[in-house]
Picture: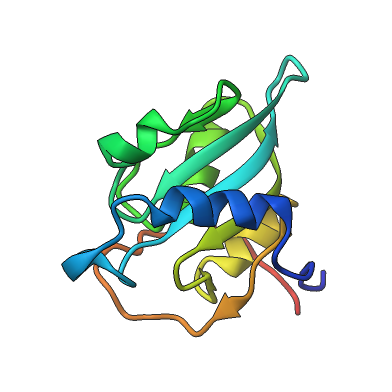
Length: 142
């Protein structure tokens, strides 16, 4: 299985950047990630999941969500929080993008393993305390 990567600056990544830009100032500037993902529910409904590397969206970010955008909470990277939420709720993630520093190389294998296409640049991994491996361990061959 190869890495699925689509050029960035897609509408999905642009929306992540819009949400990320709210309240991303001062000490938080450049230290958070907002991810957006197009997902399909078990009923076939298309929704956008929105996750944050801060555990959840800030109130100002929640206020700007559109009707089909669902805020996601979790204790890991924004992308992993989205994958975990989707798995727990019987959803399939089809596409995912991230604003801020992009998708880290720790998260990329889990995204690809889920079958989703990555719509943001991949950056080198960081060694931080917020990265929690997804509940399913994936074996990928690159």
